[in-house]
Length: 152
Image (cartoon, rainbow, N blue to C red):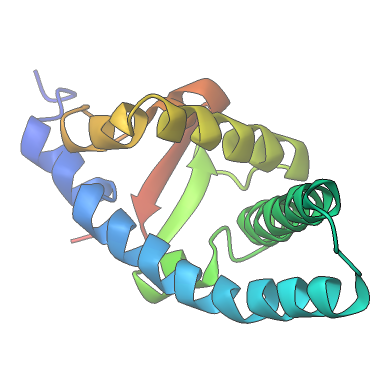
């Protein structure tokens, strides 16, 4: 029975719901600056006089916001930091099941899967609170873990 890991050991090893939510809020603030800048520039150079034009601008703006979030998140998670700035501030890192850095492709898949976690009434994120290794749906889909950088 020496190899058995208790549930509390897992709590100490992996990032739980609230610390990951705090990391998300930090990233949200960080992404606010480029997002507002891109939105402002797009709207200042685009003449949208008709309802159809305005819908096209909104669609393009939303696509650009999604692209900013994807490049930031996937780029940072696949970097040597293995974390976004928010996760780094909260002393978390994203790894594969063996504790190794994930690729940009896997980080991209995790980003897409997190959209599904959100679309399912955020249940994919809430799963973090009750799963053994503190994984959300997007973590399961991408075979990733969010580990604490500092082990107790």
